[in-house]
Amino acid sequence: MTRTSAPMLSLEKVSASFADRNGQLAVLRNISFSVPRGQFVCVLGPSGAGKSTLLRLLAGLLAPASGRILFDGAPVRGPQAGVGLVFQDANLMPWRDALDNVALPLELRRDPDAFDRAWDMLQVVGLRGFEQALPSKLSGGMAQRVAIGRALVQDPQLLLLDEPFGSLDALTREKMGEELLRIWELEHKTVVMVTHDIHEALYLADRVLVLGRRPASIKLDMQVRLARPRKLAVRYSPAFGRMAARLRAAIEVQAV
Ligand SMILES: Nc1ncnc2c1ncn2[C@@H]1O[C@H](COP(=O)(O)OP(=O)(O)OP(=O)(O)O)[C@@H](O)[C@H]1O
Ligand SMILES: [Mg+2]
Image 1 (tube, rainbow, N blue to C red):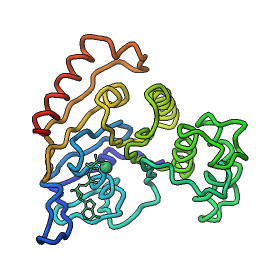
Image 2 (image 1 turned 30 degrees about the horizontal axis):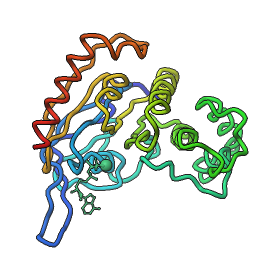
Image 3 (image 1 turned 90 degrees about the horizontal axis):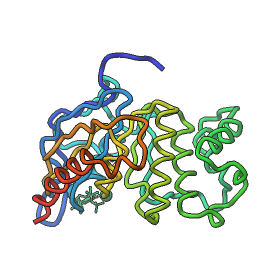
Image 4 (image 1 turned 90 degrees about the vertical axis):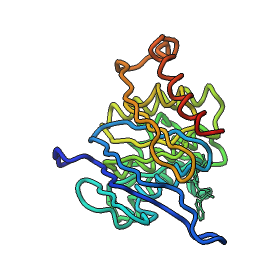
């Protein structure tokens, strides 16, 4: 991996809109921020604010109406090899077992080591012994881990996660968060993750961005200065409580 001092991602006055019956629906307005290499960023905001739209822009699946997005110093013009994406829904191929699902992106690139690498990745995401399980035999959390493995196996520099734990129960979600932190610490990825959960965002991230109502701009850009590695008990510390209150206030002001 080449290491430069340029940020991994930079957004310069980015706006996004969609065509609708009344003309244009402005979704994001004048968004500027940059993400240093290795940073773990969480994005919060009310439903419909444009969080998924922001991730799609970062992934190169959507072009901004104005402004520009740089990935590793170069303008984003389409989907990039160095970017891994995980959506809320694991979206696995039902007829492929866990190993074949993780190997798929490598197979498409005709990587001769596709299955060895996919095998290793399944161990990293904690699915040893489930290599041959079909998606229908996996729990929601396990399927989501396969989806994360499928994104990571391509060794992306940037991992984009859109509410990856949205469909999971609270306990599984907490475990998945810890798992994600473990992988992040191991693989030194840059992460941008959308979540609805303030506590999850604070527990995981180095920095939390709050989007306002549509057309959304950034209402709060907060550094999370909590020591790492983080223990679940940090959620009960006064500093955590104060930051959670600040984030809640920023989101609630928007929700009325
Ligand atoms: N492909 C599209 N065509 C037209 N409008 C769209 C499209 N995608 C999103 N929108 C609109 O853009 C706005 C933002 O959508 P987006 O999915 O980014 O919100 P979100 O913040 O991710 O919401 P949620 O928290 O509910 O997932 C919504 O009003 C939505 O209807
Ligand atoms: Mg969304």
